[in-house]
Length: 493
Ligand code: ZN
Image 1 (cartoon, protein in one colour):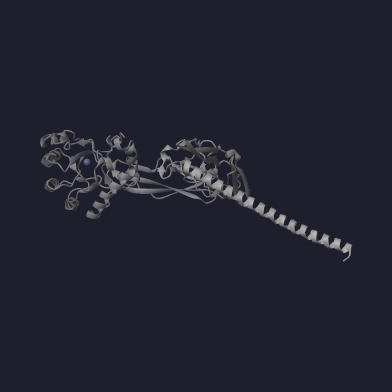
Image 2: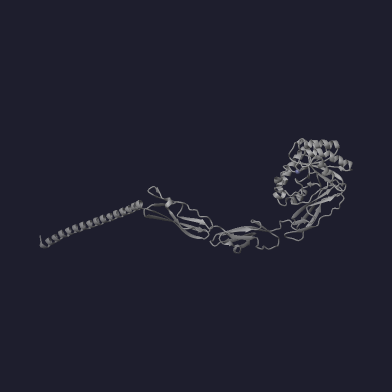
C-alpha cells in the first residue's frame, strides 16, 4: 500500500465517522425539539384545563335566555327575555343585578348588563338591545285608495292623500307622485329608509250622480181638498252644472192616501239620483167626534169587558196593542170592527227608546203580531208615553224629534191624545172621576182624542158613563182610520 492511499484510506474512515456522528446529533436535536414541543402543548392544555376548572369551581354562572342581540321596534315595548344564574346547582337568579335601560322612544343601541357575585367572585354578561325603526310610512287617501275617478277634462289636484310615519310624523310633503299609463304612483321614505309605494288607477270619468234636496222635505202631509205643489229643490253635481230634473208620480188630493212624487236628477254623464217625496193626503179632521183609544192591552178580564160594552153601545174604538195578552182578544176586537193600532211590542222604555233601530225593531214585532192575527198591515201607531214624553231623553236624547219624522217617512201615522182619562195613574181615581176627567174636556169644536187603558178595571167601570154622556150631548164616536188626520203633541225630546 502506498502512503498516499493510506492517507486516503484514513481520511475516508474519519469522514464516515464524522458523518455518522453528525447524523446522530441531528436526530437528537429533532427528538429534543419534539419532546419540548409536546411538553409545551401539554402544559398549555393543562393550563387551559386548570383555568376552566378554576372558573367552574370559583365563578357563578349566568345564562341569558333569548338572543344576545335583541331588536325592538321604535316606540314599541322591550320585555326582558329572562336569565338564570347558578353555582353548582344552587339557584342564584334572584341575586343577579341587571343594569341598563332601554328607551324605545330613541333609536339606538342599549347594553343591558347582568352581574352576579357569589363568595366574592363576579360574573358579568351583556345583552345588546337595538331600538330600530323598521315600520313603513303609511299613505292614506280621503277618496278611494284603489281607484281615483276625476271629472273628464279636469286636473288632479294632488290633494287627497296624506303620509304619516311613526318616527318622522307627517311626511305628506315628501311624497313623490307620478302618473303614467292611467296609474298614479306615490312613493315616500322615512329617515331610516323604510319606503312605501302605493299604486292607484286614475280614470277621467264622472261616476257620481247629482245630489238633490227637496225644499219641502221628504214627506208632505195634506188634507183632502188641499192643493199640492211640487217642491222646489237644490241640485248640484260634482262635475257639471248642467243637471236635468224630471218629476213623476200622480197626487190626487181629492182622495185620502199616500202618494209618491219622484224627482230624478241626471247629469251630463247620465248618472242619475232619485228622490222620492211621500205625499200623504188625510181625511179632514172631524170636529166634535170622539175617538176612544185604549193602550197597553189586550188583557183578559178587562179588554173583553170593554169589548162587550162597546158592542152593546154600538161604538167603534181604537186599540193600541202590545205583544202581551191573549191573541183572541185582538182578533175579537178586529172582527167586531174596531181599529188595531201599534203601541210597540215590549212597551219597555229602556228598549224602545234605546235607539231608532231598537224602536223600529220593537215596533215591527207588534206589527207582525197584528198582521198574523188580522191580516191587516196596521200603519197607525201610538208612542209609549206619547210623542211628548221626556222619559226617552234618559235613554236617547233627541230620539222623539227623530222618530216623529221617521215614522211618517216610513208610512206610519201617529196619534197622541188631547184628553187624558188619567186611568193609568196608579189607581188614584175611581170610575166616576175618570169619567169626569173625560166628559169635562169634550168639545164640539175639536177632535176629541181620548187616552184610556183597557188593562185597567176602573176603565171598564167608567167607559159606559163616558159613552152615554157623549151620546146624550150630541157627539159621534169613531175609530181611527188609515187616513185620519194625525193628532200630535209637542215634541219635548
Ligand atoms: Zn202605554
